[in-house]
Length: 114
Length: 112
Image 1: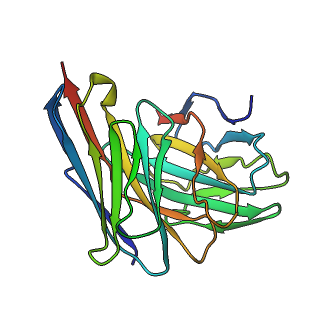
Image 2: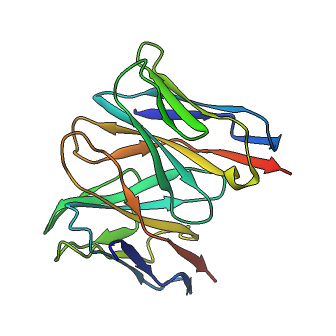
């Protein structure tokens, strides 16, 4: 089955800790994205990557870091510099081709800071 | 600054009602407008609109884009409890291939 997987589903972090959220896709998509969703709000873009070994900051990149060493994988690290990290994190991917802008989403990771 | 605004933010209706959700945008380099449905976790794709005035339809759901008014509507007829979800509108850009900006969503609750 093709799709996007995220792990873990739930993550608890103590203040001052860095944590890494996993995102893997087997859709052979070029681009991958990380979003943050807070209650009552839409999706805000953290980072995105169009190609291996390259990524760009989104609208709320401060306190986050990413890597794209493989086409299939785009892990997100939430660092201790992120002051309010409790949120729902969604990873998505898309094929970069004229005529389609659809993004396909993983099931998400809910991060709670204790 | 690129902006996507959805209204209403929340809506409660009864089964069988028809609803209209709105999305307006102020962006540079518009390429397409997309609608997604988010029931519990992962948003799923509903429609992608690029041309003004052409309705896209899927069952009881339909959507249309008005490029002159910089807006789109999503209609759901004969609503069912399974339509309860957050409906997200997003705009994709000609530059920054693949990047989209999302609105805050409309939370629809359909009561039996």
